[in-house]
Structures are given as C-alpha cells and as structure tokens.
Length: 429
Image (cartoon, rainbow, N blue to C red; front, side):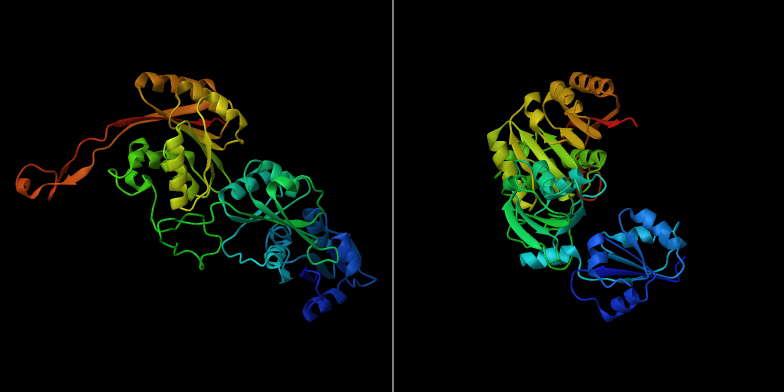
C-alpha cells in the first residue's frame, strides 16, 4: 500500500497549503485529464487517469510511495472516498475537501439548500432521480453520461419545473443556464454538470401552520414532519374544512386502518413512483406523497380531482392528478413501482398489472369482484394475498347511560365501520 494517500478536492480555486504540499510530494497522482493538466503534478510522478475508480484503487494499493487522488469539490459527498474506503482495498485516507459541486451550484443560483434533496443519476438511477424531482420542490441532481439534463427533462415530460444547469463548475468554461423543463432537451450539455430542479407545490402546508422542520432539518421529506403528526389520519382530515358535515368529500376516503395496510403493503419510499387509480379525494395519494414518493392520482370525477388538489396543497406535497377513468387512461403514465386501485374493477387491475409494478394493491367491492381480482393477480405471475378488514370504533357512553353495559370505563362499541376487501400482489422473484 502507498505510504500516504491524500484525496484532494479541487473546485478550480488555488490549492490550500496542505493540498499543495501533498501534491508536490506525490509519486503517483490520479485524476481526470483536465485536472492532471491544470495542476502542478511533479514531473517524475506516475499519472493515472481516474476513470474506473475500482481499478485506480487497486493500482494505488499496489503503489509504494505517496499517492494523491484529485477529485471534484468535496470527494466525500457522492465522490471517490466511498469507493476508496472499501475494506478490500485496505486504504487509509487523508481527505482535503473543497466546496462541493452541489454547494457551488446553489451558490451560483443564489439559493439556500438545506431544504433540498440531493440525488445521483449514476449507476442507472435516472428514473429514480426523476421521481425525486416529481415529488420534491428543490432537487440537485448529479448527472452522468447518458443521464444528463436532457434525459432528465424527458423523464419529467408534462411536469413543469425550472432547470438550473451548471456546467464545468470551477473551470474557465463554467456556464450556468436557467430554462423551463420543456426547453432543456433542445440543448447539448457538457459534462460534468449539476442540475438544480426547482418548482412545484412550493406553498407548503396550507392550513396556516408553518412546518417546524423548516430551517433546521436538512433534506427533510416533503410534507413530513408537519403540522399534522403521523399518517393514516381520520377521513375528515382530508375533507377540506376538517369535519364530515362541512366536507362532502369525506365519504370517498378509505378508512384509516385500510390506508395504513395499503401503505404497508406498498412499502412506499423516496424514489418510487406510485399510481393511485380511482383516487377519490386523494387521502391515500397524499399520504404516499408524504412518505417521499412521486404520486400520480387518476380520478374520473372532476369535483374529486379538485378536492384532491386542495388536500395536496394542505399537506404541502406533490400529487400529479390525471382526470379520467378506465384502462385507456393508464397508457400514457410513467412507469410505476407500486399501484393501488381504489376503484375500477378487474379490467383496470389487468391493465395495471400489464405495466409490471413491483407491488400492487386493489380494493374490491364484492366477494365476486375480489375473486376476479385475485385471479388476475395470479395470472399476471404475482404472488396473491388479501384480507377482509373490519373495524368497530369506540365511543363514549352518554352520562345518562353510564351505569349500563359498556366495554370499559365510559366507553362502548360504536356503529361498525363495515368491511373492506383488500387484495395485493408482489412480483415473484
């Protein structure tokens, strides 16, 4: 192993005294071609072009002498340090960071970024990076060849965002361009670049309460924590005014215990895209979005779509609403990771399963419909399961009846909430 290994982060500014001394003493220097040409690499030092970091790590492990690895910005932030620290290489590092490319990009844009999500499109993760951009209002994307600004904009087709494309940060060729997402694909972009994707439901929770997370928790999940603690909230929480009497949309909300199981079966997580088909007033769609997923809600009733938009604004989340019903509406939607069919029946179920989501949940209205859905899940090659969910609420015993039969001190069983048939399927690996 090399006697000393120093990882220098370089942002185009003059090297610090420590970085300059490490570079002057190096007998092996690894970096990008433009870095090796721009920096004062000792004439006798071996030059190693830093393409495949794994191969470079093996070469450094074999080297005898002082090795320096030059990387962009902060090499400990989505950088080479993670790979170089892998135990199979046995390398011990001294890291001298510079300003990260993400910090520099937000500085060029004049924007704070403790509330931003930061994702990498490297390693075939462009679709998941795009889903983060759908779900969040401020995202920095570290791009890769073949997964740059144009490809990202195409993934977000139909979703209005502002792109701040920062090319060649810290070099003489640095350029910062601001465009709406529909114009990004018309340009040729240089590597390396960082893309800031800005826009969406920027108003946050709309009930007059500012999230206490704002300003102290970096990269917080949008919509949570917020003024409402928890999830699977009562139906009236999604009805607009906060009470069933004042909110005609409360009746199209799945019961809280059903929503809890649906979300558990979907295993919603950031980077996922979830469809909610027959979404009603969007209670389930909003809760999936509060977990950080990108959500597309499909609903045939225009008044329900309007209520859905109100609920999404209330909780400060992004939910893309598509007006329509039936299998034909699903053809133009982006690829889903998870789907819940709240209404639509077996025909919609079959159309959904043809898109091969990883996991799937459906609400059935009758036992006959449940059997049709179960059969469709099995025929599509999924592992099928389901449950009949029933719940009976507790309610206080009126004072005049306190001496009568009850289930506890001052409580009795209320009117039953009825049963809900839930079917789900997971891909068989």
